[in-house]
Length: 106
Image 1 (cartoon, helix red, strand yellow):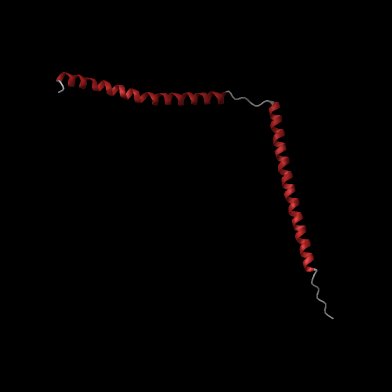
Image 2 (cartoon, rainbow, N blue to C red):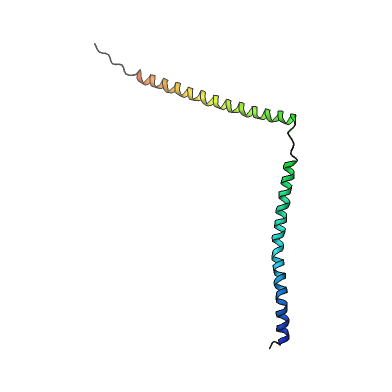
């Protein structure tokens, strides 16, 4: 059987154990919050340190944009010319069909 001294000792330790368990549970949350604060500060500092791009970089960017625009216009021209060719082919095929039957009345 359990002696009264052991029960009393265990009951006296209960509040301390509860506080200890609460602290253990709180540690990961505190670490996560601290990490989130650190990331937020880093992002803020990085945005404050951004610089305007250099002239050489701007030239490179403009060249790339010009190439993209040229490629788009070439694709549009090709698709437009293909559409015209298809229209011409369809007109030719209609002319051939309509020319095969001739009605002559005397």
